[in-house]
Length: 174
Image (cartoon, rainbow, N blue to C red; front, side):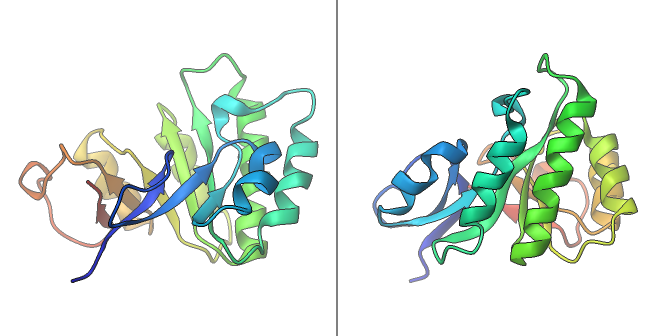
């Protein structure tokens, strides 16, 4: 039997689940990577430190080639935080570069910034897969993003029957 695979989790996996656990804080990377498991590593937009985010990027860079790190992120932009979108975009672009350097997919957090993420995605000459997690907005936005090659992770309450079109770009998560 193929195990359930959770490609984006904020918690250690449950019994019988293979999970990629997200490391939200670069300062915790060394400690967490000593433990069993698989990980992604990034700078979540709600965890950006305006005074030393470049140091956090430098710390991330130390771990992007670690064999337990299978993806880069969670990173992105969040329209509900107090941080300026210009700063969030600058940090996001730095993490995108790490994804390219590591040749690993990028897991993206996007809240009320899908348009901005789409523009960045379209304008970059990137080679790595971008995966938006927790996507739950209009299907017209999803169609446009899928047409540009983005993938999505949907949560358990979002089923095929509630997603009114077919095609690539959909990863279902429980």
